[in-house]
Length: 538
Ligand SMILES: Cc1cc2nc3c(=O)[nH]c(=O)nc-3n(C[C@H](O)[C@H](O)[C@H](O)COP(=O)(O)OP(=O)(O)OC[C@H]3O[C@@H](n4cnc5c(N)ncnc54)[C@H](O)[C@@H]3O)c2cc1C
Image 1 (cartoon, rainbow, N blue to C red):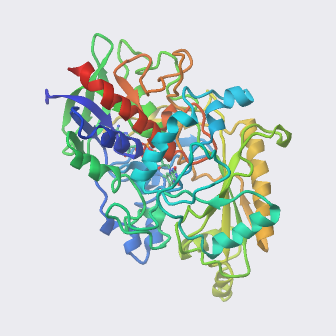
Image 2: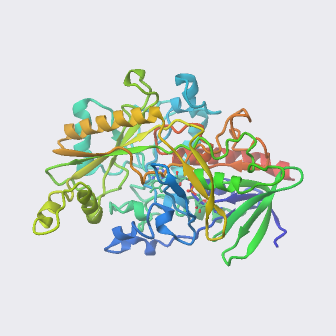
Image 3: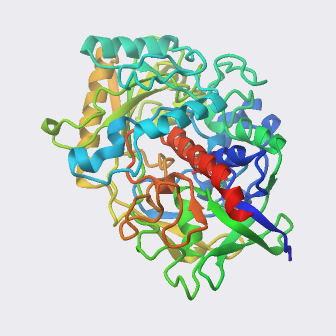
């Protein structure tokens, strides 16, 4: 049993845990991060092999239920049309992420005031803007200054030039231009030029299976190396935390975990920070029951695990006559449109959505998709039919704002357990009426864009089941302990030395990918801890 008491114990080394650890490095604080996964090795990524796409269906799959790596825990998502997608390692889900890196809009922080739905955030865009700037520098964001969808004050200035749009991006941009709709090169967490000792993107198109080039800014190549060099920060891998423990005073006093050898250990801490994502964090809180907190730790509001938000995704794919060179280039990062981002009640729903243009479909996934459309017969016509689809597709995804609803939950499954026998999370989720209308509108507009860009046919998947990769809302922040779990600093209302810094704390989801915001919040919280904690702990 270790009796060393660390100042700050972070659970989870993904996007948010890494940003916080970096923020605290070199301060007077003794910081330890426990992560259930290990370090990834770039030379072992699937893209080093010819059959790299097949491993996207096995050990690099999106769902932990398919992947079944030792670090994974199962998730019961049978009661949800959207399946949870994540990764458990140093870098967390950024190992697989596409790297699309937009900011929220100012209006996203005020949905209740503006539209009477969701909840206002306890902070605003302007407050977070300096931390977006810092995160974008640390990450090495590629993009183009001047996007009219964002305020020019404070200006968003990506540190690196945008990734190439390629022929596919230019084709789709022409479609948007014909309709007179907004589009802009994506802000991407993928470096377009050498940055901080890393080599730039080579347009391999393998982003979703880990980036062997190291150009994608997963936090194992951005924040962690600098944090560990900075002093005062340790990272222990292969350590699965079972529960957070609480003293008689009702404060968190540490965690119980299994180390890499499977030995059960206790680690004491003055401050505990959860960075396990929007599913892993409520799971851990609910698994940390005690006589003081019989319904789960920090759950006096009953809101831990409630208000789960995904971003529902619809995907509309166009089939073109000409090759589009779409297998080259960053998969998720090309151009995006926010023409329908802000509320227009005339559309029949509140809030809005973004379009992202996808590229990078490799040969196997092209075949699987065409087979699903009934366009790839077996027999003598097979190769001819394949040649008509390979490199002739472009996809638009609609990423919709999901409103927080208490019926959408992460709870503990009564039967399913992880390899250590700890109850697994169960997802209960359905699309709300507003989301249904919003997604239908988006799918219809996506088809218009593809038609305008010259697609000869389109295929629509109204809700993409695999797309449960944005996990938000399950320990929401706010000022009122009755209606929120943490305050604007991620500090639990019920347990003053317990913090949550991942996507769980989002009161609303916005309609953009969340990681830039998750990390900006973690940096802001880290900034305050670095300033205030040493004196408090002296
Ligand atoms: C396929 C895919 C594509 C994506 N594309 C994008 C994108 O383009 N843009 C974007 O913004 N976002 C994207 N995301 C989402 C993005 O990866 C997440 O928003 C982000 O990583 C969340 O950060 P986090 O710190 O909350 O959690 P994670 O990064 O998920 O990290 C959580 C960490 O906690 C660890 N952990 C959990 N429980 C325990 C425990 N009990 N003990 C010890 N360790 C534990 C996990 O192993 C994990 O490493 C994508 C995700 C996926 C899977």
